[in-house]
Image (cartoon, one colour):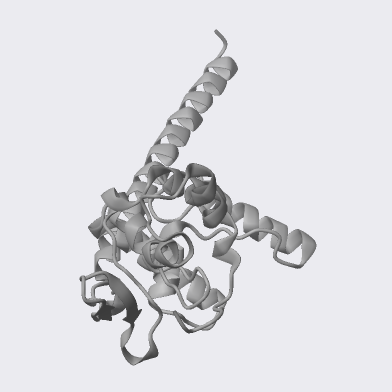
Amino acid sequence: MSPKAKQGVSRSRRLGRALVRGTAGGALACALLLFAGWLALRLVPLPTALFAAQLPQTEYLDRTGQPLRSVPPDNLPFRHAVEYGEIPQPLIQATLAAEDRRFWHHPGVDWRASLRAAWQLARHRRIISGGSTVTQQLIKLAEPRPRTFRTKLIEAAQALRLEQVWDKQRILAAYLDRLDYGNFNHGCAAAAQFFFAKLRQLQPRLRGRRAVLLRQGAAGSQSR
């Protein structure tokens, strides 16, 4: 091999080693940044309303002990807390199909949906689809804020943090317990009691219909 060829091979090897070192260094830097971000999430405060105890409602019974009427305190919406295991699976499936298809797989923020929503906004100059996950919507329900870009960033950080401290089942139950289903009913249990008498007695087709349609209802009558 001629000296010129040897110099070319040596230069190629040096460039290859430099490229490998640069790639490894970049990967290590990214890993360190991700780890630092994960640690920093522990400092993100969560909405206090998520941990506040629900105020008891006044229940009126007939002389046989059957419920006649319930009155929420301080003109608050009707709400009956439920655990995840009490919520019918068809209602859960219908809600996630409408609101957050990748709920069980993302860490609180669905980056794919967020990027899609941002691209559609930039392209069409109007909101085509939302990118908020169930966890982000739960943060929004617990602590309403003016709808700004800064608010979206705060809610994303709090959603990531909430998924560190709560499991998916608790998050989903809390979300379904706070949704406004209209007619002054917040939460699936209160809505089921108002519209269908009991949560467990809902037929699957009605659960799906309620998850999709009643979610769009505005607060209606404030009387039981």
